[in-house]
Amino acid sequence: MFAEENGLKGDPRLQAISQAIRVVPHFPKQGIMFQDITTLLLDHKAFKDTVDIFVDRYRDMHISVVAGIEARGFMFGPSIALRIGAKFVPLRKPRKLPGEVISEKYALEYGTDCLELHVGAVQPGERAIVIDDLVATGGTLSAGVKLLERVGAEVVECACVIGVPEVKVMIYYLLAGAGLLESHFMFLLSRVKQTNFVEQYQKVAQQLSCSPSKMRLHF
Ligand SMILES: O=P(O)(O)OC[C@H]1O[C@H](OP(=O)(O)OP(=O)(O)O)[C@H](O)[C@@H]1O
Ligand SMILES: Nc1ncnc2[nH]cnc12
Image (tube, rainbow, N blue to C red):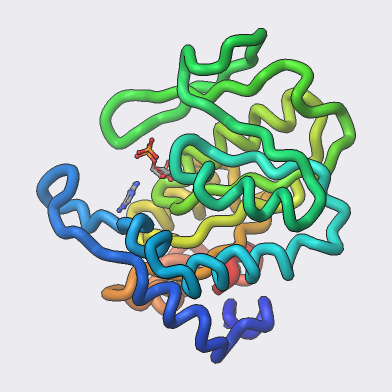
């Protein structure tokens, strides 16, 4: 159902993009299936198609801010920003930005991390999208959204190339632990290949008496 909603169902570019992403088992630690987008960047056509799909989606949405999350959001965000006529705003890890910043901590599987935004980079009322390579728990994106909202921006959507469909992540979303999918539209190009994400997602949604369409996840 999600593919139908975004009009990309059957688009051969999606399969090629998905195939260009290398999956590295047990990196950086046992049990993690690492989704490596560096191989996508090596494939000129797949890289261009990825950017084109985002550009087609956002070019007429009056977006003035593309906020990219360090580090891998920096690999897609600037190309999209240039093409849609928006500014690129880096959301950086701590102590990297030299000016005055606001910070937002977020939870990782083990421990916490933090993102920072330069004060004055985004004005109240600006329409923004947040770009990253991948969403897993949603903690990182959620911190990015919060930073932009704290300075009065309107976050129109979050966009990632890959969604990692962990059941525990789905439950986390459904319980609004990240507060993300409740209020922010997610646009994802690829899902991890070895899992039937939509079916799993619907199953979890049923268990929790929540409509999957409410989650507004698009494939
Ligand atoms: O949805 P989440 O569970 O928050 O995880 C997703 C984040 O994890 C990865 O970055 P990472 O923190 O590994 O940093 P890096 O890009 O600097 O390697 C990825 O690029 C996302 O930013
Ligand atoms: N499976 C994964 N692959 C790449 N980056 C990630 N960040 C969090 N989970 C990841």
